[in-house]
Length: 356
Image 1 (cartoon, rainbow, N blue to C red):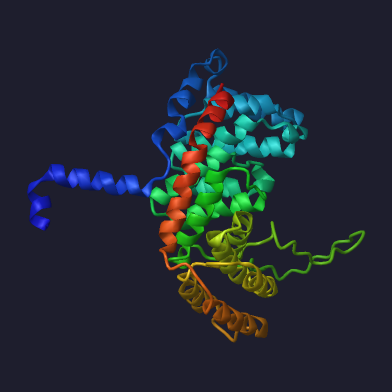
Image 2 (cartoon, helix red, strand yellow; image 1 turned 180 degrees about the horizontal axis):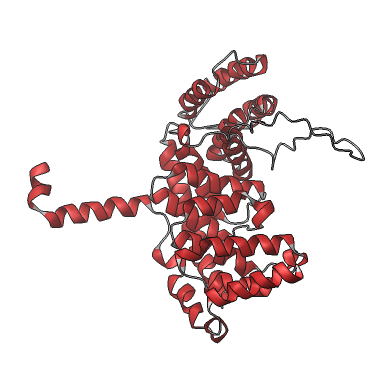
């Protein structure tokens, strides 16, 4: 086999192309590249130079304390060079701090994400997406899908899972491709979960005591949603959220794994009891039991809680019932392909109208 590839670069090239195609779920047409690039021919965008526009808008904010959402949209859609990343970030924060923040255009969200992705500014992109308070950028469905597909092609499963978690945080289940890519990305990430670590707790180095008079004290509050930072919680809640809407063997499999990762043991226990009495046929994929065991080894370094131990006994009971013996990863891939077949052209047509 090695000799064949050594003496036939053509054969090797064909093999490489086949492998690359298998890693991508979305076609090149899905990205609407021609229509996206054609926006630069707009007379309005050609009227401004991004360098000059930034100086004008930054000066206006610093002197008047306000900035127009339309002006920011023009800058975001006209900027191209990677050297202007910092300028874009500054203008987005200026808009966020002004009264015009509520008037941000849908095209601004898409343009910012597209610009950072096209210029391979991955650190800045994740910072913008997860720092919603300072930047106010939320992906549309096409952005979600392009981002996840790009990261999956690069085998950057941690970043793909981070994007998947964003759609869960927005409680968005409207787009079939986004839903299917989300659970696929989460499962691929869990093959090597060390690639996404929980951010460290902030360390207070100041020894000086500062007293501030306040009208009232806020009790510590954790909303169990936007405040989530642990990757297992985010990925688990994403799997549970998307799986619940599917209502089939694959969906129940995602729900079970997700709720355990999310440490919602009572909810998982309740579901198992419900499935045992109501579901006829295959309840979950048999492969999930080994994956749950692997997840547990990664999650629990100390003594597991009693609720978890009780749940594991119920999982063992579920293991004795009918389960699907097919490949789980193949089922996840087929789920994405079916979603793409259904939604591909619809998304493209919608995006072409948005770009116009």
